[in-house]
Amino acid sequence: MSIKNPKIKFVVDANQDIKNYILFSKYSDPKFLKMFLPKKLHYILKKNFSEKNKIKVITEYINNEFNLHKNEINKNVKEVSKKWKLIEKSYFKLICKIFKNHPWPKGEYIGFTSIFEMYPRDIKEKIFYFPALHKNLNFSLAIIAHEMLHFIFFDYIKARYDINENKELKNKNPKYIWNISEVFNLVIETWKPYQKIFKTNSKPYYFVHAKMLSKMKKLWKEKKDVDCLLDYYF
Image: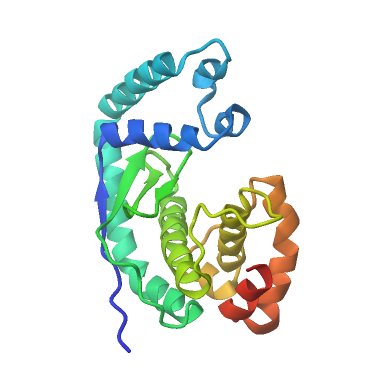
């Protein structure tokens, strides 16, 4: 069966980065959000700072950064797009193998640049964020691949287990589904066939993920079968 691979459109849009902050902050507590914001913006996370003022500061900061680094951002996006085209065939072939020819969810996939270090995705809208100014383009490619992996992962568990991204399972942490998805990505990203495509080292940034990683790695190493692995968790 021939699987149609998605084509990604890479876009520079300051307004989308404002939405990025709003999306990310909506689901993150201040301590977690602090990890991804520049130090110069940490003051907006204080309790006495209203949401309205936070968005005002963020908007000014983003517009200033996009204007100040306009040429560099545009150049980076062109280079990332060019490099993605060189490796996308190998990437999609490997993902197809992992998910047993499961088709990619339909839709227009759009990657928006971000000046922050937060790269969330909107599963329903097929949009995600990647670095606007990172010097290491391999890192940017790895971020893109990471977010794309989330799209097919959530579509797969919906088809196999009827589990949505935000579903809460009985007697499980409210973020259980998200935690599994992030650790699954780490397992795949530290797998040799994947690392042949992306020359980066993926490490957990969240203690819960670090705790879960060794068990999931073991499950994957035993059979390298996505169903056997996910059946254990779902």
